[in-house]
Image (cartoon, rainbow, N blue to C red; front, side, top):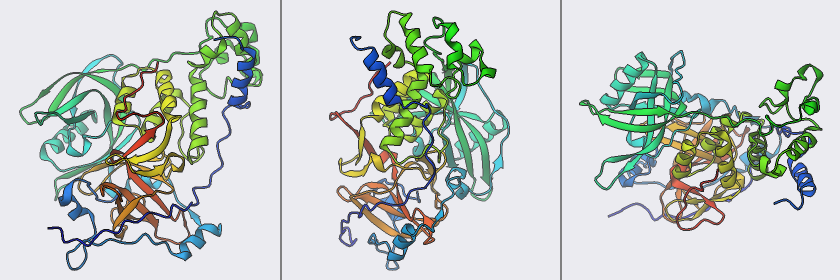
Length: 492
């Protein structure tokens, strides 16, 4: 019989907070995109944290703060007036957003030098790291992956990988009807760049980066229990400028920012700063006249325009400051960044891994991004956050990957405010993923499933004073027009 005191559901006041104040990144184009597209449409008219593991009551025994009498304790969400005053007086200390990306809670680590790059379309054999905490993970290139491994077979595999090239494979898996893990068709190579091995506990902590996408061809299990896969490294295909072959070369000078760059090569160079001038849009329109298709058709497949549209959506619909995070300008890097930092389901991520061009990935991300409005509990559908309240506490982006002392990996999205949450445990700074902040376990007030954590500042003058971290596996981005089952939209 459960002898815990009755829960008192409480909803956070959802008050606004001071977000990291940075200058917004200037628009990528001197002429606003909306105005340009409107002008084109007129001219073309008539044309078609903590150590929480949310699994069962046994996990809650480890996750929640237990009182002196051995019973669970539940705490009110109370913010002191002094904290609120320090937020509004403008004298606060801004948080160092580089700290979360360092994962200092793992302790001192040794750097592993070198970089391994496999040839595209090559077939190679990779050891797969299969851990219970990684079953919900879909690793994306450039994503940081901290791990704490204690199983002897996996530690032995990581040792051999470190001595070789530091590369192993991560493939999303989920239990099948016979109880065995079923592997997805696509995965990502992970390369270790820092590691630490504790002799007394036989635990290895590593920091790895997602590198290259691959397709699984076959797998086999060795006598040690290790799974090895034969994979094909997928290519990254750059589609290039739509008007490269039919452009009017006499107009190249109008698309260049300065006379010293006035070469035909620089005229179509895939760089945001080299092709955006006041006359660029007129030149593009005239180039389109040489073809049988109107300009708006080419705009749908111009990766530079897609980059700008994705950035504009982020600036208009979230609290993400492009100047405060490492927001890539390259179409390929931005497509990976968006897949990592947006609250996409595993089905969406796996579909993005199957696409070989950044243009296709950006189109798909843009179609999903424009539909995201609410964040809901994956178990009961209770609204727990708003897409507009997403902001970044790390230079890497609003959604990061962290590991707790038990070795469980969480992908966590940060929000300025959240609602319909119940809190367990006293605030604790132990093993905090955000140095300077204490974490409190948060669950859904409706179904009581684990949702994430509330983080509160230790210092009264630290900004922001509080924020919320929601685990990706416990929430779902409610898209406009969603049915009961959400499937990826196959947009090319």
